[in-house]
Length: 135
Figure 1 (cartoon, rainbow, N blue to C red):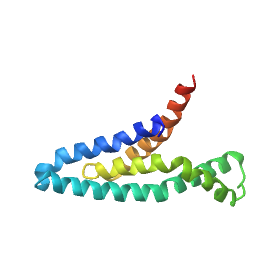
Figure 2: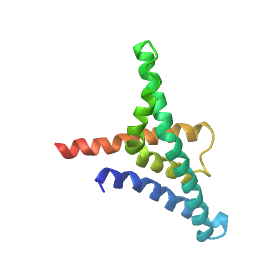
Figure 3: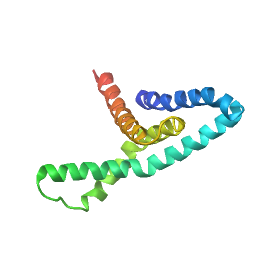
Figure 4: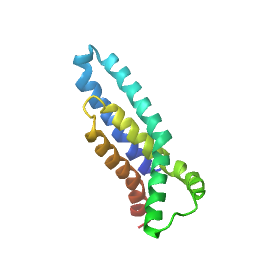
């Protein structure tokens, strides 16, 4: 596994450890807290995996269409989705797992802002490591 993916996946693990540590006394035990965290991380990862690359592709398509001043071929979105899911699946799952772990503390607009920022960072982080390694 490339180094960038390993580093991207460390953040959800650290968030899960923090949630278990912080919520163990509230939930009654670390085991209950770990189960709740795992369920929330799975739901968040699955949701972001299903919708993240799709929403990102549609946003990029609309931005390019607005920049061009005309609506491009809508079937191009289907072609772009062939590349969106292989390239964006791991950063999307990592972002969903991170947001799932931080769910008790993040809600509303703060969760949207943080999830958008972390998704962008996770996606860029992988590319930055590839560029550093090439030098």
